[in-house]
Image 1 (cartoon, rainbow, N blue to C red):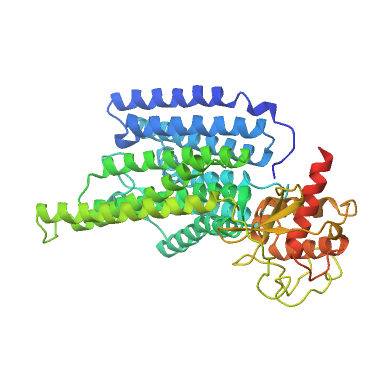
Image 2 (cartoon, one colour; image 1 turned 45 degrees about the vertical axis):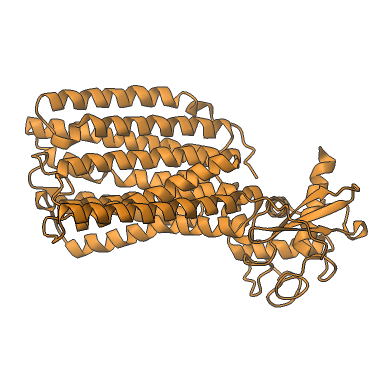
Length: 499
């Protein structure tokens, strides 16, 4: 399902404005660096990486706006603005420190916290690209509030003792933290917030099928870039001690990694919003995330093995790192290949037997009572056709004789099931607008979790909507196929007739 709202013209010129602003910041930092100020903050590699990432986010915002994804476009605009703010605050901090201005301390503190908002915004952009509802998800609010609080706490509690004096942020001796327990607690909450969207989207993707599975998988891979960036930051601390790596080099590497994560998320957001599910593109996205994680593991382990206090000699260190690279890299390559194949698998395996889901003829957990009275958000104790080994979606295709055939997807395989023509009601006119959205997502192959992720509702709400849909369509329990398959058949036939 894709959003069908009008583009936002104001975003169409955003890449040009972003490029000019980012270029001005890069030139300013280069000038300050040439004058001997700023240390790693004025390094061309880090500044250019942030500028490129800001432009990429702006381009993504423009494309998302043209495709009608307003929420994702606004969040991508915020991502571009946050990267520009990081660059601008670097210019301000270096300039005020060089001039000995009284605002130098607050400027440095603000710059030192400006790397957190891009992590939140790159996740929110990718997540919003696969959602069709207009309501802000609770998960988005949690991520925004927690990481906003982390930014504020970091700016207020952490101060530089020798800003830009060759000791950047990863060198602990150059910073002091007030109320350390508070900072530690906010850090833990921030890490938990960064894991929320990847877990939610991967769960929804792996429980769905067909196009929906691939789109959710691309978005999930994009959100995974944020926690990987944090892991990279932690590895830089390890590289500093005990790895004895030059901190300026590590800090520039972090800026490049943050920029790369933002570009990756922007590309994934556009891909997911377009509904592009070519196996090669999905495989590239998934492999990029998996190999990045593998590289971080190898770098971290290699740093510890090669630390100055290690008893291993140079030859032994080289052998250990080489073995780790082969094992971890090979495993990541094979694993991500299988995951990409799973995300893009089409249900093409024919079978003559009807579908018999788990839990009885309809695969329910506790019978087939009609939907509970009240609003769709009422709590429902039993779950209809939840994600898992049983079928959760269907699509319709004619067989060799032209008869209607439902293709029911299971975990990575499909089963073709004849649908009795007389069992299919002719109209979906009695469904509400929201029920139509739920049914359309079901017909695309989304599981309950996948529908919830796209429509920004809870899984219990999806369950209640499905029960109402089954009742209105006259789909009673039993028969040769389950009700999800028959409901999907009805919607796809309805869509075919409208064309």
